Structures are given as structure tokens and as C-alpha cells.
Length: 308
Image (cartoon, rainbow, N blue to C red):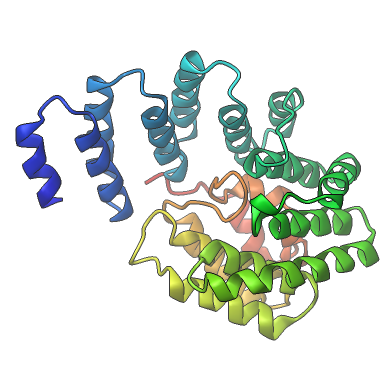
């Protein structure tokens, strides 16, 4: 922060400096300060699509969804029909519980296989609607000839395939997809032991395979690799993975405690769109079905989430 403030004295008209300060303040959980820096950077460079996207994502993390959507619309004014921006908008609308509107946004999109973020948002839509057949076919086709350049993302897509198959009721196919995903991802973990996204993927895969000790060990490992007090933006994502594992593995008290924490703080989500969990998503997401009848969980699905 000191170095950036020094640089600002010499480059008072550079948008990159307040932009960088916005990122640092955001990671430290200084949301108002970060917002001020973003606004300053945008005054200096109002047509910077990358800057506007990051500002939108800040609004998203703090659950200021209407403002996030407006900011993404500004991005689309600069880059019309940008697939990732439209998919990100759909992710926010999913979090608001409007699956019909999210579906309208996603239907025209045909992301290439290497755009795994947009693709996974489409798969999540199908899972939330509990109509995953079309996405199962698409993912199966993509993964029949996976692109080695995608690295561990192929294994992540295979996790999504397994989840879609499980929701469709084809549990044997889901187990096979998850076994293959685990085989593909474990070598990457040896190369990237601090990759919290990869660790989270493996936690969810082991959860799907019913390996409770491995799933919890990996979920706890991800929280140690990226603790909340180290990173206010990404730190909540491993807590969400832990909540999902606990919900599926019969640890209702631990799942509820993690969800209560997540809904009380700004949070980047653990899934494709990186949208934080909301009461609407808790109502819709099949992964929370095992704890759906718990009164504490039902209360969470109705409560207003913290916006800051």
C-alpha cells in the first residue's frame, strides 16, 4: 500500500494505481476503501472493461447484486455479447433465485470447451433446475477427447459430469465419473499442493465417492492453505466446500455452522460463477438436500444475507 501511494504522487492520472489499491484493500476486507479506489480508477479510465469487471465482482462478493448486474451491463456496452460476462450475470441471477431469467441469459451461449467457467455455470443451471440430461451429453462429448492444455480443469469438468449424472439418478455413472476425476486430479495436487481450488475439487469428488475421511481431510486442508484472515475475498470458498462436504456426509451441525458463517460475511463462492451462497441457492442446490429438513437450515434459506 505504501509503495502504491508513493507511485500515485508521480503518476496522478494513472488508473492502474487506484485499481491496484482497490485489489489490496479488497483482499484485506476493507470493502468501503476498495470501493473508493475502484470509483477513482473508473473516473480515470471509464472504458476499461477489465476494471469494470473486477468492480462488478466486488459488488457480487458483497452481495450487492443489482449494482453488480449494472456494472456488468457497462462491460457489455464495451464488449457486446461477451460470453463470460453474460454467464457471470446469469450466475448472479441464479443466486437471486430466478432460474427462468438465468436460463434465458444462458440459452444462447455456446462457450468453447476451454471456457470452463461459462460452461460450468450452464451445468450448474441444469443441476439447479434438476434437468441435467442435455448437459450430461455435452460434457460426455467434451470429455471423450479432453484437451490436455486444460490441465486440471478436465478433472473439474468430470466432477461436474458426475454431479449432473447423480442428480439425474444415474448413480453408477456418477461414481465412475468421480473415480476417473480423482485419478486425473491427484497427480496435479502433488505439483500444486497449495492450489485451494484443486484441493476443493478433490474434497467434493471424495464426498461424492462416499470417502468421508478423505473428503473432510481435503476440505480442512483447503481452509488451512487459504484461511479467511489471510484473504477476505477467496478465503470463504474453502469454507463453502467444507459446508457442502459436511451436509452430504451427515455432519449437519458442522454444515449449519459453516453456512451461518458464510451467510454473515462477504464471500466469493466455491463453484463456477464464484457467486456467494444465498438463501435462494440454499433452497435450490441439490447438494444441501440431506439437511433440508433441519429447522436451522430452513431458517437460513429465509434469512436476509449480509451485504457488507
